[in-house]
Image (cartoon, rainbow, N blue to C red; front, side, top):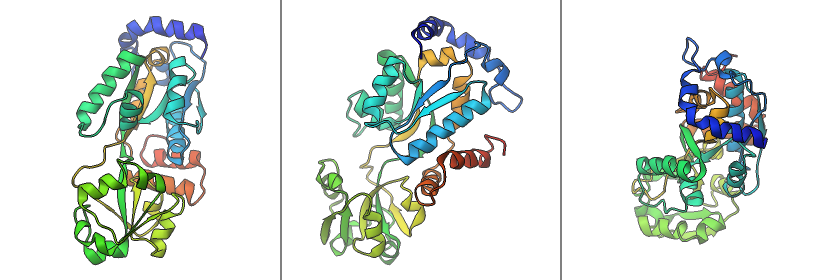
Length: 315
């Protein structure tokens, strides 16, 4: 984004609240396109995404919502290597206006805080305050899903031992084989902390590449693995996700990080972004990831169909 625009937007930030009030809404409560482009701005809104299927889908959702509910256009840069580490500097320089981010990622990787033991409300308040103070950015809405670590157990095993929570697994762990990606097994806050917290003593532990561990689970080579709550395979296989009843894992709620001067520069943008608030559950996100990763559907089509299904876009 051009420097003169950034300078203009910075000056406009002081009157952002007034500008947002003047934007107006349609009868159904969605942003009014005619009002949203009152600035006459024709530069595309720049959206960044991390290199993962989930982010490609979310980037498309953001683009399609903004373009449908305002007169602005968007450009999405997909799959930026390094994720947060490279996107945040580009956000600071003004190369990007916004991107989907996860609460604990921002809290730990950007703000350099320890997320263990921090409740969600406290973390959210700190994110809002410190992103504003340090970066002149904010977080807009929470999408609803939580992409955090989980324990996945093969369905027949879960049914045989009536496993519903991570604590249920303790009594039978010595009869089961755990398989996980090597970095999770080796990291101090990964497998070792999991076993210490829940007093697990697995019959065997295998290091398995992240790309094949669900196949190993399905084939019976392992019984339990570490996953993420929105993994596509959770929607594709007979797998039970155990409740983390001791709250070992920190939460990674997804939201939109956006430059404050971009909100001033593009009146109505915040209203459009808020349409993502509460839109997705963990199972929704896992299903959408499955459609792209396993069924090889286009992420733009998957995003569009979901937004139509939820009544955000017209068919």
